[in-house]
Image (cartoon, rainbow, N blue to C red):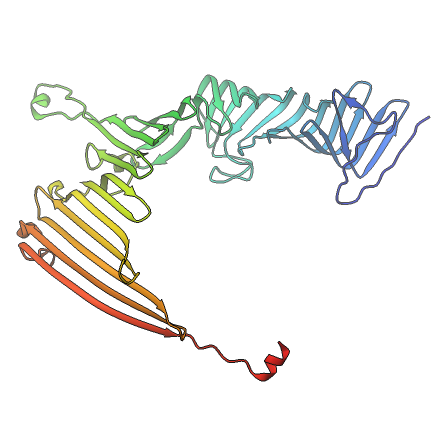
Length: 485
């Protein structure tokens, strides 16, 4: 006797927990939950067949398909038509035909497409799933998302890694390649016998996604970052850049987070092409290579609830290094150091900075060094009238080895008083005063005459008083509105 139970569900896809005797089955410690348009059960063969927008859920593993056949005796679950398998980590597997166990973790998939949680994808003719670990045979990998975004079309990415076998372990968050080959625009480049790539964003030692670019200056560029995680608050990223038309460049960045603050130290370096002196050339010598590099470091530390320090340094060995390797197209590099003190009513900043010019015809000595720039502000309460007083002191010195030197300072004070009269008038009173002092030397070295100013010491002062009043008129209520109230 065959017992058929047909169940119609609404478009909201009501989730069913099959609980009738002979139909519900406990798979381990958890039951498989169904959602489907129609459901058929054959009690003689103990087979459950679900059709139409079928959804199976167990322990966070989900299976979606047009049709699912579940053999309760053998524990086999066969899914057909638009099959989609999602594990608890968010990785999604697509296939034409999938055979799973009733744990929904183990099975085989034909024509497998595996999309990782970060958007990367793997495709294979055949794949097996065992305890959420996917093993793909004759597979290809690309970090490009399935929709295609800057990596070519979704069906044909601009670059990919093919391998005889790829193993995706979501628990360890690693992809392991056997006999891998890197392909660019469908052209095989070189073979990597064994390769391991990290997935996810929680960090761990290993190679990150390689990057391939092309520029007329450097030719084809291959970058293969290697990430090292020393602890939860310290890591290092080392990236070699290999070019077809230039010598390789090594780039690195070290980051650390401490109790008092954070800092990072980065940079890159290479050897320049051989520079042969006239004497070496006459003797048939090869000359020597020149070191070229760039440093970029910064940090900030909170020394106390009131005091903090921060700084950065950016320097290059020469003016064309950053542009030569397409690292940056800035024309100046600025390095700074600063100390700050902040409380409820005052602010103090002591800052110094220097600039390295990267312009071709700009003398380095014409760029200033600020030592120091000091800014102090304080807010006080007027003890006599109850107003507010704001004070500010500021000074700056700019020093050049081949240009005009300047020093300036000013002091300012402002008093504000706000009162409301008995008639509802708002009265504002303001007093302001400021004095400036200015000094300059070597004014003739400034090429723009308008910016030279007068040499020696100069001064000026300004004072101002202001008063304002605002009257707020209130419309009286008429007798009708009074009656309504």
